[in-house]
Length: 102
Image 1 (tube, one colour):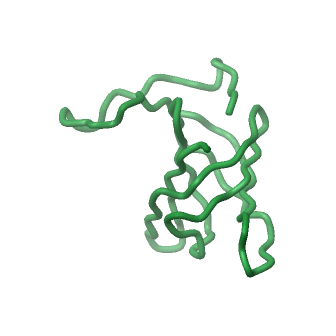
Image 2: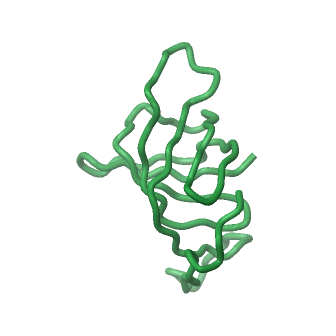
């Protein structure tokens, strides 16, 4: 996934014991996710990009059907590709998911 550097800002680690291999960078913008290899014919998921790293990204959306292991095609104004859902957290009506870029 390629994003213009002007859209990125360094995020300081939220916790001193941060174990991520790649630093996260704040990112902003609307993106589209399409679930791949699904038995269900689903509509594109509209999401908001929250942050990214060299290996993945985190997005906010309303699609509670996304679960770990699913693969999606993603498209952002400055990048596109395929990713795998690593985790999903549901908080009220909002859903956040972390993705590993394939």
